[in-house]
Image (tube, rainbow, N blue to C red):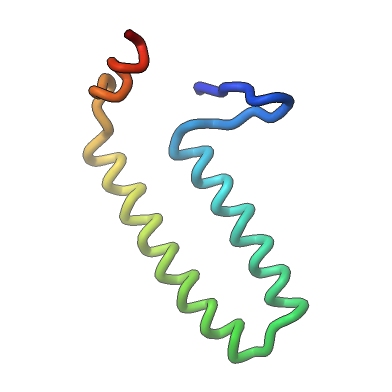
Length: 80
């Protein structure tokens, strides 16, 4: 659970933080669509959302099956 502070905000630099951020972004998009968009637009964005969900699920499965290495070249350079 790595959290680094930038001012008063705390950001998670992992997949959970990415997932939470995406969920919030999609919630805002759906709220705005519900208030402002036509049914045809909502339907079309629904297809985009379904595609995104399929991609997110497949990425989540891949991360479970093939976890990231603990030490990468990027991390070794930052520690030096």
